[in-house]
Length: 114
Image (cartoon, rainbow, N blue to C red):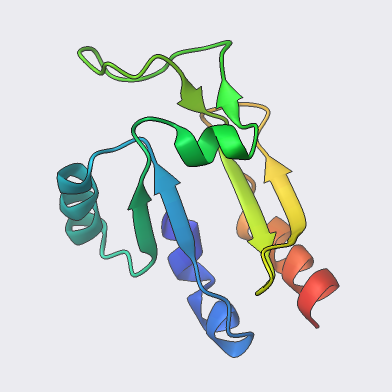
């Protein structure tokens, strides 16, 4: 999540709104938001409705903490969506513990928005 804050000036320059979707419940999102100083719009999707709509449910590996009742977790994914809802770019993580770096997102911004 911190990588999005690193890119905030570039997002603002291009009028990009960052929205995150998480399986966390709203109170968990609020706690994490204040702990990390994140400014993105953060949505809760504990039932994986949004995740499933994009076909991003990871059935192969469950990495939630003990006691988490989530049956599956999302594949970590970054999307660039235009104002009409068309997906311009998608970066799906092959390893649930690793995300692409800011340089990958910068390249997508340049390719699709400049």
